[in-house]
Image (cartoon, rainbow, N blue to C red; front, side, top):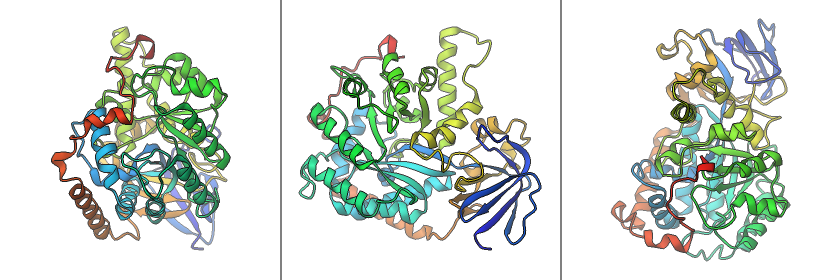
Length: 469
């Protein structure tokens, strides 16, 4: 009986093309899986949760988050991309110890769950040793979130004695794949986050082939600023290395032909609108990607600079796209990108992008019960005239009342469950203090900007080309 739940009387957004939304309906969950969906289900021997006045929908999926940066919250509120690279990637990342990564990933994953994100892609490029990887992974597991732990192949700004070579990092990923993350049925699965492709192409090719050998999803930062020579997408296309297992991030400088290459390969894109606009990467390309047939998703990216909820990301992606179209065309006769379409970017489309489309991303029998309950009776949601539009344009993280991951409540009636929040906060504060102390305090964070050119081609600093807008 404890593994059977009847969620009764909610307004249901299925986000599934084969199942219509229900103004009032029920969902039966058995052993973590959606067993039935419809109005007035008659079920015995189960727990019942009455959801009159509530909105039930699939949990959100954040396809790009550097969860390890949770202790650095808002330190980069006024940082450009070059400030960020100097402070975070060059200065701070080498100062993180394994226990700091555990605290960061635990708190960051709980923050995501609290905001209705049931799945995230953790782009973990702060791994200095096997102990770092194990600790980061444990943080996600202990939080109870569904995650793609994208092991970062990028070396740190300081040489690691534990992982001194690209081959050692690939071997470490293989260790995880053959031990803790050997099964793709676990809540936390293995992925690979590639080093930025301002390294010799032979090294990038080796990383790609390593990820393919492991049989795991691949993600990479792509075309976030102008660099010399062929783009990442062009290099991969030239050797037949594009594919549906690749999730590109940003692509704000990508020309149309690169977006068409992604679409033709079955690959996907994660747009992170808040970071892209702050850091000078160019405008988010949500609309341009969709027009070129690219499966498009959204990510929160870094709480070291911006927010960690997808309500904000959805609204920014939608309204920035509308503003750009309006600026080109004048007063619009119609708005091309619809609010309801944006909701699909963080549910069904996001699940497909990371290989989980058969398991999550919509409400349909047979899928795992990754669900969120929103307070549709809250003032900011009343009256609920157009539910999908209201989720995108009116709702916020405070409306998330309950969250279920694979049939288990991780948040219920406004509170995270089975979590000592005081201990989580204490660990997080200790991690922040320890990391900042190791680098000499926050006043030193931008002191190594001259080191950037040793690690990245920092580009020309020009505005995006006309064909990349």
